[in-house]
Length: 553
Image (cartoon, rainbow, N blue to C red; front, side, top):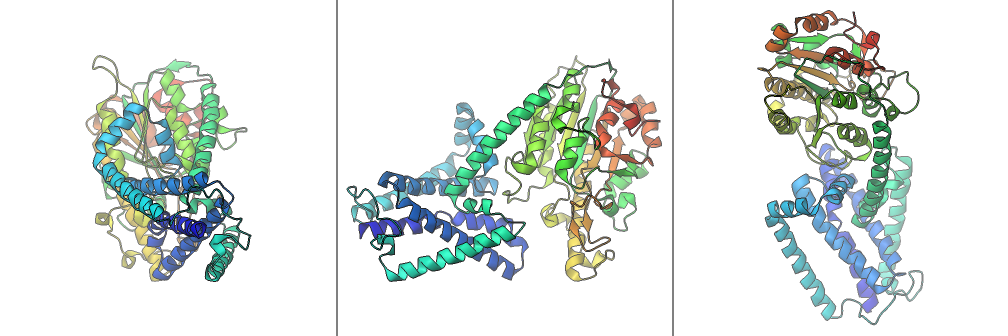
């Protein structure tokens, strides 16, 4: 019966050490669902953990004893890592964190352990206690003795794990229900059979290792392709000391007071426009209704009519580096995973890069408000790497989470100003729909606060701030849809674009101010942004086309 004890113990150990997966499921999805939805979600999570644990236990019957022990030990170590990661990063271990760990040098590792010493020591004490309990069980014979080399095969009638009739029935029920969950993953477009292994920490580690390897290999090729693009400066008369490009997310100009919306969602930007500091462009659209497609075009010569791959074209960051303009990418978005890959690639072309999180979007559980990017900006503004005797010219990109779904995660409670009672527009008048619109408007209000906070940091400098959203969003505005991704929807492609100029900028660059103001009503698409930036900065390269600049007159 020692083998039966081991198999049963391994199964329950795997289930126990994957409770963190259920915690993640609740925090990431369950909190936003009604109670009955949360219960069903967690039940499916429990079923998947139990089903995968059972399958892995059965697989271990084919493996030598040391391999079975290795699985148990690895699962135990991973739960400690997951608990630590949940406490500090609001996420279990994912590909983004794994890439950071693999890229950490010994000195950085020592410094990190020193700063997190108390928590690490606590987890080590817990692990030692668990190890002592494990050893005590082993001494009592609950764990398979050393002489036993292999369990009978799972299909064998003599298999210890299935020696008990009750266990046979329970195992069969778990496997049948797990098979049903797998079939659901096939049918659900939001789910995927490929994601099933992630429900077990050991499987998630294997998937993350493969993803990290694939991403690094892909990144290496793209970086090589970008670096291979020639940069030839034909003329360089840049005279703007500091440009901050604020890249928003999923913000519709149709929900901005600045553009005539009936709720006061942009009090700060509206005030600055009335003071003559800010120009709001009324007819700017995005080429696509999704972040990935827009990011390919925004900072490169790869526009909507281009052929080939985006990384086969020149980009603004390599051009500015050649023109001795310092560049930085400061982001509150993910730096890894499917949605973070282009952002990380563009960031790598800059002199400096900093992210508030190294998590993939699909696994990040925290409400990382955009105010977290402000300290990164403060550091970049305080240390530009140049002496006072040298002329300074900076181009800083600040990438926000903006008003991306889930809207109520985008702002702190102090910005929950609008309620369902305030929402009178939209095609649906039910309370739930109006509440969603209120949450979106609160996210826009917070976005206005963040952009204004960025402006305040350079108010006394010769500086210019551009704010642009990657694409728009529908919130039951003209049809019953909440979200983006529909290329045919004008509402999802109508975006805000504003340019703020400081008093010093207006005094030193009056001709530029006139050109900006003259273009206020011009119809223009953001995939030509690189031409506008080069026009504004007075830098010329062979690929530049003046007719594509928003400021062309």
